Image (cartoon, rainbow, N blue to C red; front, side):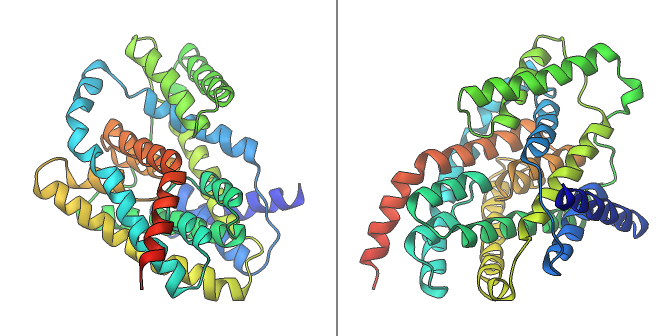
Length: 344
């Protein structure tokens, strides 16, 4: 409890500092930066998975509440860009495996699961089953998510003049109690049903699907209030920062440095794919960046909500990316092992 209480206090200080300095996304970036700094100087911190998952249900409901019949019909036209998701995953693996294996000396299992842009918990779990180094995987994926989430807001603001100060929803006082109760039901019931069905990303996708059903039926008419979205940002940001708790200088010189180099590669690949898609007129540039950026699904959903992006487009591509990575992990691992063995 002491470690969790200190995490909350440090994250709150981060929010306060970002607000005083008028920096963007104080409820998301403030906790990330504050907890990262605290972890690097050795302060004891820990998270709470139950609360973290509960906060993710808010994002699931927020996305599901945006679904309408015209929006679903428009998703049919996304097939050209959706087909590019598995292509991008393969390209990332083809670059990432030799990058980690040859340049940094990681074994194949660790190199493969470190390079795959899947969910943090999924990649660590699959890596553990394959015999990979769990500490390396944890630090690499924590760094990937942190860098993408920290860099993207500034990129969105600088290149597309995105307004990051937008309230992510209406105030709770303007939404009736029946609607708030329905949102809570969608979040809790959707999460638990998806969990029992073994659905990946259950805390987000379960509430998303249930909220979408009620939204399409015209029963759910609001997104979660701004206060709920800010709370989700706070706990998600905190969870990203505290993943560095206990990191040593040796790990910073190897694991974190290797991860930072790979993040540069990932961001460049994202820009290349986004440019190709935008050049062919398949999708707007900002939505494409948010959809193809290899960050965490929850973190990028927050960004998409704040800048007012096309939620169906962004979420559909991230769900497919996670789906491809998770279901294709054994197949791709076998392919890349054979390919790597043939290289001189």
